[in-house]
Image (cartoon, rainbow, N blue to C red; front, top):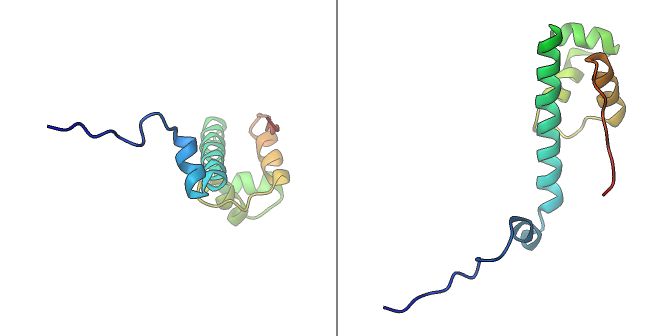
Amino acid sequence: MTRQTNPHIGSSFETWLDERGIREEVTAAAIKSVIAEQLAEAMKDKGLTKARMAALMNTSRTQVDRLLDPTNGSATLESLLRAAKIVGRELRVELV
């Protein structure tokens, strides 16, 4: 029996994403998903409904829905900063 070698052994997930040209897209989606989940959890901890959160942010409930939607990447930094402040959190963004 001949032993076949796997061409993917030793490669990384990041390399695989780079080869397909989707690394930035996947990374952005993952970050947005984590932020949406953290924001939803913080709202729950504070007992805030979407309607109340919208009122505190001086925006619409639709905007809050966008912030909480892990697949919607249209949230602005300004909106995320306001939302974080309302739930007693801080948003950190950095280049590494």
